[in-house]
Image 1: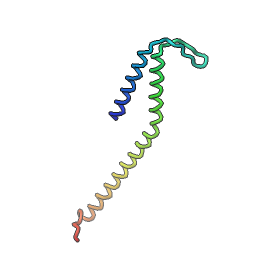
Image 2: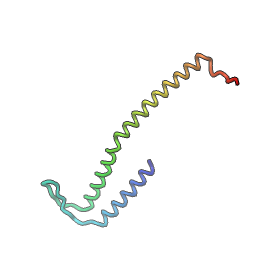
Image 3: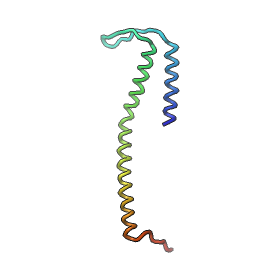
Image 4: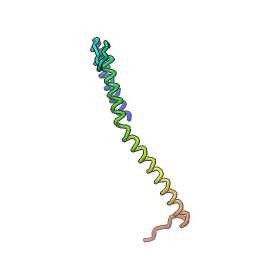
Length: 98
């Protein structure tokens, strides 16, 4: 997780450096709307939209892994309880005789 955060910070620094070096005012048009804004705003907004899109793409896998981890934890508890019951019935582990 730290490596991902480090890469994200480095990428953000590159985007910020590019945006600061290109401070021009541009016309932004979308459908019937248009307006003047700084190139910096457009670059940062596009970067933020890309990060948000990547996060949304990763959500299904996150929830699937979380569900699988919960099921595995339940199964482990069941098996540990079963092992405990079996040890209780036999009086503990029996020594292995060759």
